Image 1 (cartoon, rainbow, N blue to C red):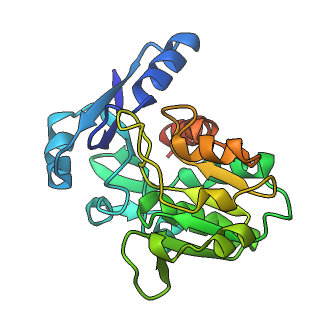
Image 2 (spheres, rainbow, N blue to C red; image 1 turned 120 degrees about the vertical axis):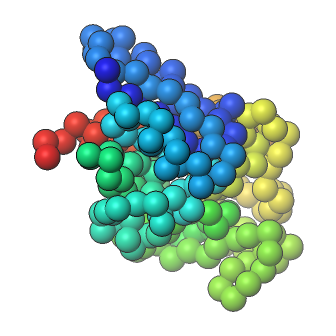
Length: 245
């Protein structure tokens, strides 16, 4: 039996186990199982690997996409550039780091993206934001980061004027605000400045429509959630875990 799983904390929001369990059943894959491994501290990762000798691959979610880097024995070029990892393949006990958020986000974004969405705001500065930065840079879309605390090159939410929102047509939420079970949360931006020219993308996929997306939709904006990105990155993870060595 090959074991795969997800590390992060908490994991109550995650659809990953259901996604892979359904996939294994649908495709007749009987020698694999997928488990949730909630780790209160990333320092528990080596103990998990030791305790689960059949472990072959892990997905990594909030808040460990950056914190997991020091535990990797090898990493691909994208992980080296971004400093964020969401997929680990275990080979003879060695942890090989990858980032499948990149391909998932890019394919999903391009489905509804238009050339008029020519500048972006990225809400949040965590590990998921690193993959978003990578894709926006690849697509030639200038962006600014937004965090709760202002720092050099990073705006805080209080700095987001209606003019900034009006003129920045792509807004991407990489924070967990609005994610189940705390569905009432949403980023504090001037929503009244949104309009049909905007594209709001939320990496959150549970619930299907966050308060952030609902606010954009009410004002005519194009919206997308993270569900397709989840599926795409999951399938890319599966491909990585099964590559011939």
